Image 1 (cartoon, helix red, strand yellow):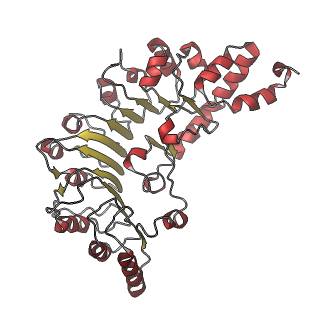
Image 2 (cartoon, rainbow, N blue to C red; image 1 turned 90 degrees about the horizontal axis):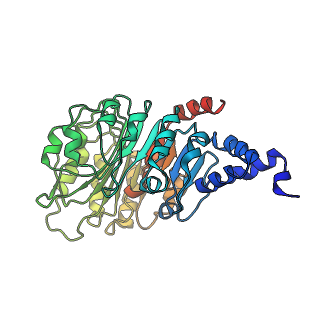
Image 3 (cartoon, rainbow, N blue to C red; image 1 turned 120 degrees about the horizontal axis):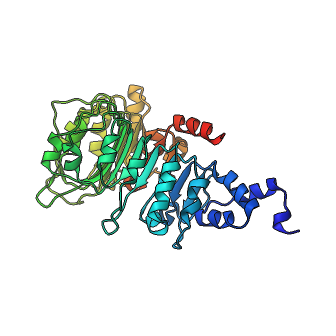
Length: 404
């Protein structure tokens, strides 16, 4: 029996196992029958993303509603608008821009009526011919390394903003701010001016911050930046500085989850523990704390933090070389004496965190299902954080489009 003699249902099952964009396009061109079946398969696709081998460890086991691109060969984009009318998120990285003609990308974007998220980060060697953001009317999630006038015009609708290699001062000085923003991810350099012109983002729930030090700067002002977001619930910080600035006059009572990933010198005589202690007194309602790879954190520091934070239930000190069983024993005794239930993890028991908190994901992915910091961000390093967190409302909206 030839493959084309199989019933349509069987062919659809086979095509359902194909997630590579180039493979689907090639199958679409085989004959009219295959074109119709491939179109039926791809109209249910919600996410078009770049396959990143390093992040996914070479795996290509994508869900049915994902299609990825990862080959170096050019892709015929003339059929893309036909194949993918119901995308929620499209990833137009340099790889995609190099493989698909610009006019074909524009046609695809114009046809994506259900699109809520766009990833468009280009290198400075390949600047875009024109902004494709001008063709997206319903965007709520944006990942880019530039904010053009078309993004600024949509600022009211944008709920998630992922800025890569974008100057922090440019963001904070803009006249128009993203007042409905709920998640902000920034990889940036900054200067002192950046922290005094911060937009008042009243709805911001999640902040992920990676600030690069400038040549003349040795103090970290990122926590001052955090102070501006009074309703912030979760923060993920990558720290490259030795010293921090702390405004002790402000309390931040809404913060529940805090991850600080350290990349600082092991030997620094200027390490000011009192500043760090003052910082944590600002967050009285903190429940989940990670201080990862801080080689200068000591057992006594752990003991003090447990006493400072009355609502703490999870303390992750993995990678902190000077933290030992002594600290773990102290936490156990403290729990018993004060009726607390703090879970503490360090180099001696770090594997237990996965069995104790099985719902917390370590999977590296571009898109995570659920607007949930603890589930999708807490256990991950900064470089593993998802570009977008998809809430249930996007999935239900897309199901409506998929019926047509």
